[in-house]
Image 1 (cartoon, one colour):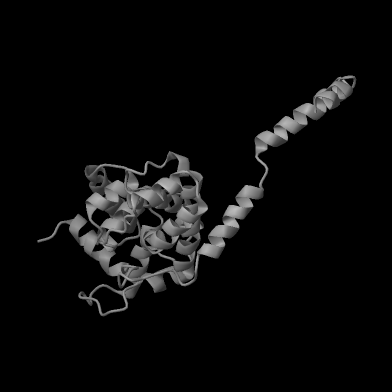
Image 2 (cartoon, rainbow over the protein chains, first blue to last red):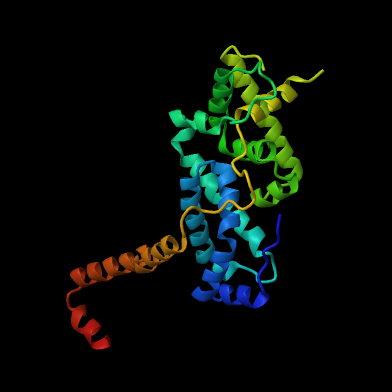
Length: 184
Length: 75
């Protein structure tokens, strides 16, 4: 991941609540924050709204920011929390929109032609109903293929805890599919 | 020979694609105006504590109306 760290002076001015410094940080980091949220929520429009929500939380917490620490890591942690809050309140957990599976399915030819479209749709739907904490970890680690260390830092947990959540997500997903008569 | 968990992982990867197809993905609109709008909304909002304080003062004056001149004197 590219490093986008700011001069310490900008971070100090931001910590004091200067709006110019906040705008500079916003313009420099918004794309990175947006991409991180997009990886979690998987919807560009929602990711844009949550990017604004993230920076609003960042602005609200400016006095607690330590200019000696990484702004990028701090922003990513807040972004992860905002995305998690969204997933917790999202109706997607209960009922997946019809367009979801079509948009999420791979466009390229699959390596295994034995896996039908219906099976992939059922898998995507079952995955969307997993508990948000498990879903975030599995999405970032398995689908988006982000490093475990970065996921752990963003979620504020250990690398081992991320691996455990991924394992539990897979196990729960497999059980859900088995209940539908599907044996992965 | 793969384990059931490994097969589940493969099935998941084939069912959901990565959202970021290239590293330069950016928001489709400038988000700064929305950010400013959000900040304006927040700054215009009166905190609940101020409303509670106002309600307490009104109640106090309603119970002790003779305190009104004292309050006005101190304002």
